[in-house]
Amino acid sequence: MNRGYAGAGAPHGGATGSLLSQYSTRLGDTLVRHRAELAERASRIDAQLANQVKTEFIANISHELRTPLNSILGFSKMLKGAGDSPLEPRQIAEYAGFILGSAEGLLSVVNDVITISKLQSGQFELSMDLVDLDDLLPRCAAWAIEPADDSRCRLVTRIDENLPAIVADAERLKEVVNRLLSNALRFTPEDGAVALTAKCGPRGKVVICISDNGTGMSAQEISVALTEFGQVNNQLDRNHEGTGLGLPIAKTLTERQGGEFLIRSEKDKGTDVILMFGPAEQARGPENGGRDSE
Ligand SMILES: Nc1ncnc2c1ncn2[C@@H]1O[C@H](COP(=O)(O)OP(=O)(O)OP(=O)(O)O)[C@@H](O)[C@H]1O
Ligand SMILES: [Mg+2]
Image (tube, rainbow, N blue to C red):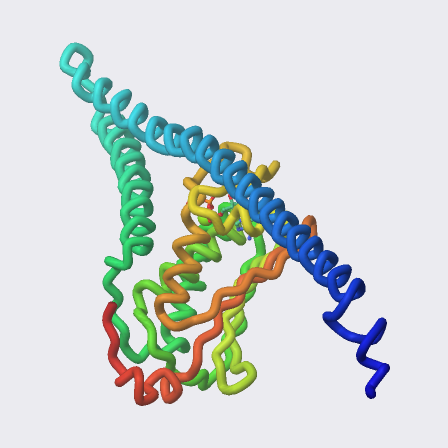
């Protein structure tokens, strides 16, 4: 007779077995309740974040649309009313310049809203081809010279020679880098530094980094900044410009081109935004016959 299994030692038998089964039922119930509470808390936080972003979006978008519209209306009225007291050609050119600048600003806000909605609905067309970064990145750096002067920031460029070609949409990649340079310059105080660097990283990947020693962001602020229309309160952004679409567009565009998008940031220290692309030979693997179009 095997006494060992008849009593206390039996895993599911007798009084101990029923006690164990009661415990496991209770434990199961507690776990289910705990998970439900966690899910409920997470969805409450998501809803709060979404609400906060929505409120900020309405405030920002009305500012971003109203300001240029008011300027267009105001200067058009001045041009129209000029019949009684003719304007000098210099004034006409100046007012027309203000109208043009405001209309361009308005168009870029509208274009950003269209871009993000097309990206979200998967209707965004990409024109993938071989991209020579030795040619593309210096053009981004040249674009940034003027905004860097305006922001009184030092612009440093370090692009390694002979970077491997990558497969991407050249225009869209340029747009991504320029958006990130524009952020870096906007959120870095005077006398700060912004750098655009590119080098060959692990596994032959090309690593493009846009870094600054500006205001930086906490981990929570990064997740707000990556949410559509999300903006982080920032004392450098006095006029609360922009719509909060730059980072989400840059991230989605990078990932759609097969790249990786990482943000490393520390409050009051600065921010690195890192883009990583496999070299063209990897991108042209059997599943990706070289050219691609979404
Ligand atoms: N390099 C950076 N340093 C510090 N904060 C940043 C940086 N880049 C972005 N942010 C924060 O993230 C927010 C969102 O950036 P994003 O580019 O999406 O929008 P935006 O620059 O405010 O407007 P736009 O749509 O014109 O780009 C910014 O408002 C800013 O608070
Ligand atoms: Mg931006």
